Length: 407
Image (cartoon, rainbow, N blue to C red; front, side, top):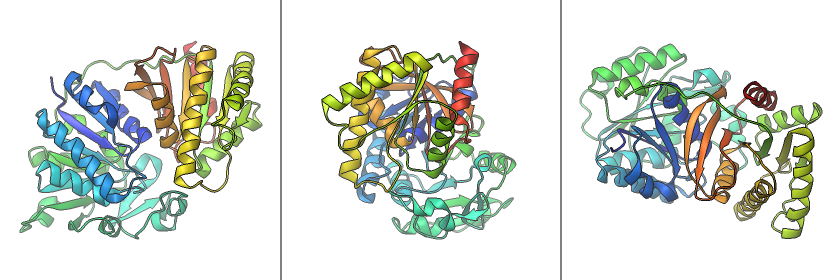
């Protein structure tokens, strides 16, 4: 059976945050990294397949090419419904990737709903707001690696695409703005509540289930009904201690969450970016981490707060963290790993040889539990992932609480 809906995300935490919306509705869902897409397209039995293209930090033309390649691969398997998952703060190659979906799919209209009201991200008059602040004035505009460029959704898309963008106001009928349009375009919707998202889905359903949609995890929650996806029972969250927390995020929210946990007595180790590639340092760090895990049941491994490293250095650091995690779980039983930040999550998943992830549920908004499937049996069965800017300050306490509840 081929997937009925193909979802494309530009990083792994976003892929899982979106995939879990389907899982919560009882729709079987598989998440895969782009390197394993060909295999999973052949073997996939789930109605929803989510691919992480890992394209957020690529140049715009390469990001667009990778997305287009994934769309064409899915079309070759008979898939004709696509959802382009975008970051709720519009970081990354939004314009290039939305355009690639339209072009590679042969479609004409892509309906874009970028709001995530539960996380304080809403769209007013074509402008994205974060906790009441226009996106271009928020902390996300100063993202160390991917600062947001542009003051409106149309402006952000225009930095990478010549495709026209039209905005549909709250409660407005999209047919009004589509009248007389003869070329492919992106239709962006204002939304400030989950009720708005539901109303948009209802209006789109009247258009005979449009095949091209886009947005973040907020609108994805309404896609099972929009596309008539088959539902069944929901799996229960079943995670066990010990817990290894691994963070490479530089976002101020993640840094605050780690400080909160450390002040509450959870031990942590700061990764030395110059030493992490050296096997001797990794051996010593592994002994320390394993000892703390056995004594306390929870351990944090984190990168040093500060300015973002240049891309080559950052990639080397992340590969080193992946190797360190692999060494840790080869030395002791680690049932659950929590990963903060999409780049960190991808690095660890790659290092552990994980080829597929089944999202199960959320501990809280944007904090996703999934089961890992890999080519090497290294003892990890459960991952908890979150984007750097998601989660409450006590998120580690909440993960620990979920572990204790299930133990």
